Image 1 (cartoon, rainbow, N blue to C red):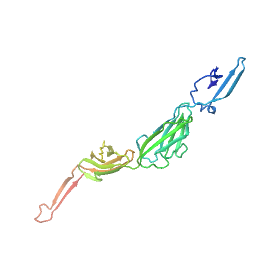
Image 2 (image 1 turned 60 degrees about the vertical axis):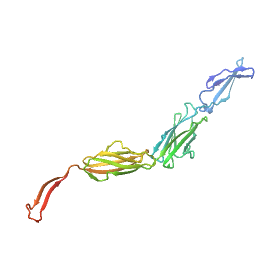
Image 3 (image 1 turned 135 degrees about the vertical axis):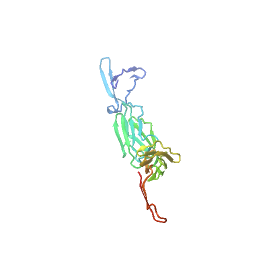
Image 4 (image 1 turned 180 degrees about the vertical axis):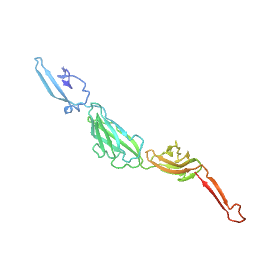
Length: 293
């Protein structure tokens, strides 16, 4: 008998009256063979060299290795600013395997309706040993936690280990209130404090940054109640302070304050009193020149 190009000699079994041999099935599934099976050729030759060949037997071989699913985005525990986040994943079968049976693809969001390979928003591109897939939700996801599950089988009926990922949608930027300094403040003191409060109900804690004239002022501590304070040193002239609060999803709120610093006192000159001397009770005029930088 010849299977997959290899001949095997069968031995007569007097008990059964049949020619027999126990062999190992081919190591590769027959799914991709012509017709989906291995053609078995049986040849018998008698002692007069008369030969008979029979090719009616067919051997079906199935692989036993599960496909592998990898969800590449979103990552586990991530916060997303988009309410229609692309869900990307890969489907892979073993080399020389039966291949991914794409019509068994089952994606679910929050345990809802099964989304298959032909669903709107699903795109699966063939690659070596499988597919690269992206699903874009057709309806906006609500703000808050969500989960995605993906499963698929190969053409030999092996079902993959289901993969899942949980993430949070947050489309609302943080609240931000800057109480000091007030906008338009004029001061002669270089030392100042940026004081405020921030909060984000969807993805706390938030990160606060303070930039003075375009220069980041370093780490800003935010307490459990959302209060923060950052000491800065103003430069003479007009100063621009930009305070930004950013949540875990990347959404941010920004407030700008303009503060003017002048540490140089005005200069008085050309003081004149007319008339001088003056009569008792008479009107006099005092004048001077005042300059300020």
